[in-house]
Length: 138
Length: 244
Image 1 (cartoon, rainbow over the protein chains, first blue to last red):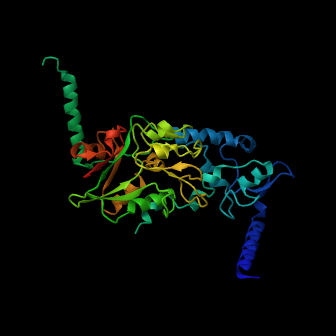
Image 2: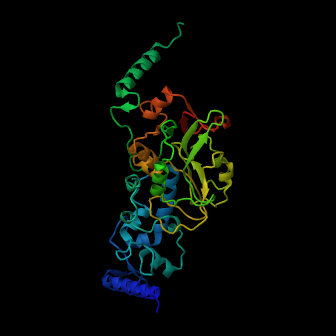
Image 3: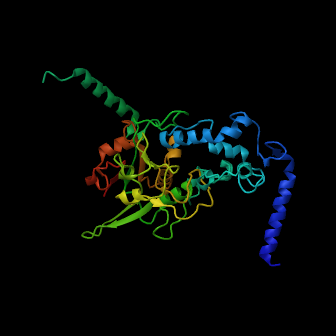
């Protein structure tokens, strides 16, 4: 076994152990046969979870036009806010495995997510904060 | 001249006295007018964001503005001619005299942007406050805007963006350019390049509302000679240069 394989295996074991530790946080959505998701902070945020499950895409698509084209900021519906709360505490992302919040459900429902081809799947605190841009200069 | 409107004349006198009272010295104000737009309010057409670049203060070899832009908006250092480049430092040499001029080049945020005229999907658009943007939700990556722009200010993202480490969404297959740090401006902050240039003491970049008589940029543009690039095209860019 070469070194790379060893590193990969240990990483895999580490990640599995991480999720096992967080396994009590996995929440079954859509009954016992539905996906079990790491919902991050969880709890009700902007709307009732049942409403969000079927309507989140409508809220976000409306918001994207309002914010990008008209410059309206500060709406309670925002993709960044979704990610901030629902990113896994294990890998700090809403993507990565079928237990991650966005990816898990979208895989189950067989719906492609385009959002994260451009948007960050990490919460704000795990990105390079905007105010660091200038402080990073020598 | 009996038809002079005395009321208007008085108003103008009072108005200029007020402006003089607020400004301690040219370019120095008693208080800062920039503030975040309240939540839920759209960008206003009463505002026109612009920038004044003083090439006499822009130092040769310094690229702090470009570095700040890259860090803020998360675009990698360009290695080839087709790599993404929102902003670049340009050094010009006047052949006859040997005089060197340094300046940063980026989207000039035209009042009549040709990139918006040619966009087939409406992705390229001008916001009410004059900031020219690409709505990447609608961009199909045809690159027509890149051909239309006389400043070569736009880039196409050829490679997948794997590490979204900034607040600025970026993605493969779309065109992008300087946004005047629209997310910072909406929070009432300055664009990252301006903040970097101010911080290192060069103060070559001044950002502000071209329509606000109390803003530093308004006062500066009225007191010094400035030029727009390719003014002959009639695009009325929001970016002006001093010392070209």
